[in-house]
Figure 1 (tube, rainbow, N blue to C red):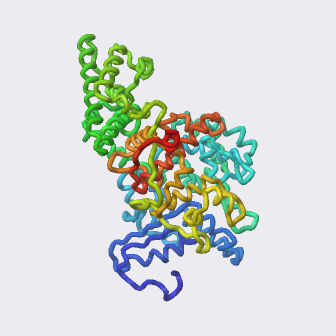
Figure 2: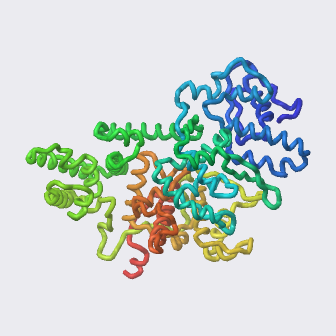
Figure 3: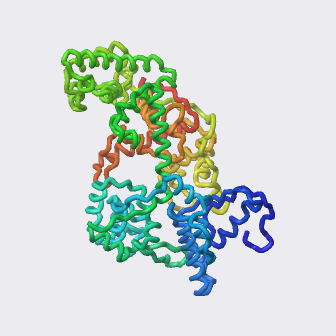
Length: 580
């Protein structure tokens, strides 16, 4: 509270955490003053989104203020926004002193996060010319641009604004060329929005507020300044040197940690990292690193699940491939790597290609037929014909028959709820929509009836009801799985095994990517359907869209099972059993 006499009279508060910003920098300064009154080090942590400052300009917050009071509050709010978005070339304590007209006897306090970042060297200035020019070009296409529209326009994926999805003619004309330039630039899209607050401060962009018809909600509109226009027009303009935004540095820190974990994982599995290009090691990605990672995680996945025979058989196959390579290298007086690079050997052992054509297409050039014969013989001899992740079939079943997931009959209680499940009540204390559907389902209503008959009078999709029932399982609620399975997609053993292997590729055992809150279905779909899943939706064929929709349903069901601890068993489909 900022009310006089209502504060916290406690001298040894060590941490003050704000979940969202106060309205002004004065309020923030007063509130963080609760920390460290005993003179010992304390921490102030603020979680914020840039858009949260905009809402404080709406009539809901300033409607009763005079024009002069509005201007004062707006000025403080914008200074607070700059304070929060500041880069490592600033000092937070100096910025607070400036607010109150004080001149500190130092340029840097040495204790705030920005000063520590600068002293570590991580916040050293960089050349952001390409990024800034792309942002300015995107903003210049419209007559007042929403921040959320900038990145989609740069990427060429902007679908329009408002319910009408209107696209200004200037944006429609300029977006394809800008998207092409973005792809050629090598710029990482995720950092562009992080730069916008800095570009306001450096006067490449300007901002003014707009209001909805009701004036209840504010939004920011961005325009290009004369300085920004000069950068667009003059390709030989001086470079734009800026301190990196904190969001970018945080992304880089997380990426560095991810790369370090990957290196440790591969090294402990016996992978020789000296044979991986330094550029791939720095990026944590690339064809050679991907091949090694896929192989290591495939083997680890089989061993984690107690399938030692498969893991040993695959390792024997890889060893035989390397022995073949060494023998051919001696006979042809070539370096082994020129006969078959390590990463290609890993890819061959991982995918187990059956055709000679496939070996040629992936780049095998030396004695391809010999390698093809070796693969065919070893795959049969080692019992690997059903292991290949890229070509799994329905091994062990009769002709025309596939094993499918067998759901429990009757009411099933999940062993546990999803670790990320949080119960959130509905509006005004009502039940959340998923719990309404769940309750009606428990009372015997069919999902299709639930979908068609809603309290709002507006029908919903059956898939939405299935999603509600899935959320109930995620929350640890019991469910009649026999009835649930009637509308849930069928999942064969081959499909389950393939998704299981992809999960192992995305996160090494014993971690499970399915449990992540930021789980991305497309990461599962890409290994199955290829890079075409990243194409613009409008360019996809109807067949591609249907394939994606079917696989997305399977992926969601697979993840649901993993999140709630459902261990599947497999048997003939119900349809097959009825025919029998």
